[in-house]
Image (cartoon, rainbow over all chains, first blue to last red; front, side):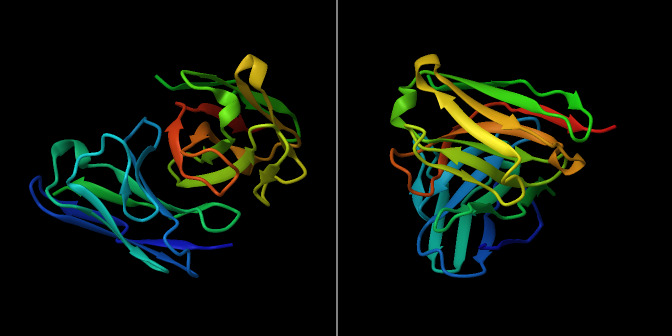
Length: 107
Length: 122
């Protein structure tokens, strides 16, 4: 199965700063990489699909990039509501797999 | 508005069975494959199982293959997960998830329920 490694595990930033989250796949997933946001006590929320396509209604400060094995989720200017855990997921091969998550916390 | 409401979670002893349900509304269920994803307490997400729109295809994670069975009843707008021979490592919040696009391609999930908690303990 494809292993997704997210880094860093925790990102400590202040509101207004830029966040850069990484997801690396153990083998190529082409552009079939998905990003989710999860806040405490809530279900995951779809952010980005197929590496760079924003989900309906997602603010433009969120963007995704990458292909093959290396992907990035960028939040250009952190808002208070963006502090959460972010997961990547590959949809290139079965079984579907998720990364271990990056927690974006307030510094 | 799409809504997914899971139910059936409980505290059960190892080796016992449990059946989870997911009631779907706000969209045409039989247009979409549906899946179950779980999250152990304080841990990350793990795909469990998925089923095509017409029940013709079902897939399982290796960790549950042979023990869990996914099914659906489009007439009742419902998805199910029959869980047998439960183990302590099956303890998790189980989410029902709708796929973003029609078809059986490996999906992204655009809507999730709030989850139902399964605890396996003696």
